[in-house]
Image (cartoon, rainbow, N blue to C red; front, top):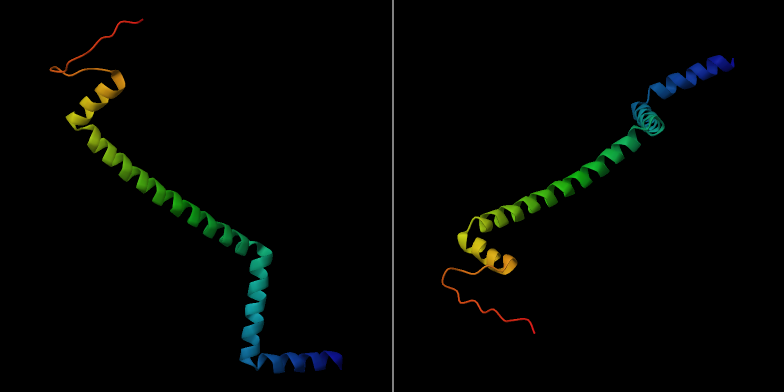
Length: 101
């Protein structure tokens, strides 16, 4: 008789679509967690955020380098760098040389 009662109980349960849907969602959730797909999905989302941040920082760096490149192509900038860093003088500049004491 217990098998018959079990079969009747299962039949009653299957005639209630809302409960069957909840059970299916529960089983689906448990299988995702136990399978590790949820953990992998969370890791992919974290990686996506990190990579998106790196992309935006790289784009900002590219913009900064483009400005520097444009500035470096200017002859006045090149002359100023030569004067400041290499201690060069222009054609009409007056240069003072002091003897070492």
